[in-house]
Length: 217
Image (tube, rainbow, N blue to C red; front, side, top):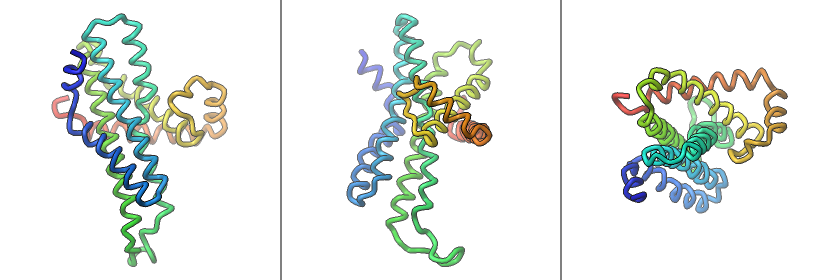
């Protein structure tokens, strides 16, 4: 029965994500590029986000004890930033040469464009997985809860932006969320930058959601 339930959530984006993991790892090894190899791991984390949303739905529909449903929702919220995190890997473009002399003379090195391809494709797939995971969660929300949809989304996106900040700038993983003192030090050391970063990424989350959400939602 569990396998049958999981098949219902098998979709082209999830298949693409799984293919990307293998492709990115092979490409990274063949190019001896650690960034591309690491992108395959980032995609695994984005896949986990989607699978956690599926788990929440299945537990809810099976009327499992509330403690398990709540625990799975908490895990989903903690891991959700991983579906948007790959966007920040665009900063690595600075290590690659796309111009020989800006703005008219291009550096025609296909190696750099392999990296460009991998990051862009990975970011798009991961974004879509994150937004599909939201659709899964919304499918079990009551009509009363849906009236607070954008309030809930804003809260999720703010938390996700904070998570991305912690992951990018103080190198915190989702499973290190209980390291409270380390988190607060990382936030308040550069608080003004932190606030503006979270604001910008919350807007990025919202725009991405509007652009990529399923029709009719």
